[in-house]
Length: 110
Image (cartoon, rainbow, N blue to C red; front, side, top):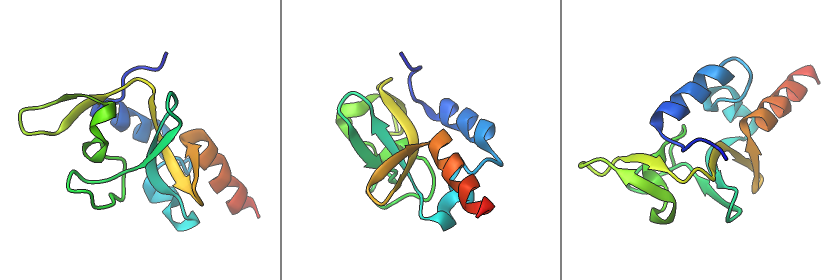
């Protein structure tokens, strides 16, 4: 089972994928948008701010209540279900970070 998704895990993933094309700033030009995928329900959730506006990076605050496990007193999401993974959506398809990085690398090589 995956560890629970939380802001600290997102920060770690961004650090681990920096320079690979697996972060928002590095794949936006290729049409990727930050998103989350629930491996249990097969639902894709585009990353959004708490008010519903699209977010240009991975942000947990816009995820629906059915995946949220905990919030702080101010309403910020502290954790979501362990079945939720971060990645990107392009053309209606979800790409995990590794897949997005591979797509970006393939584009750079061509």
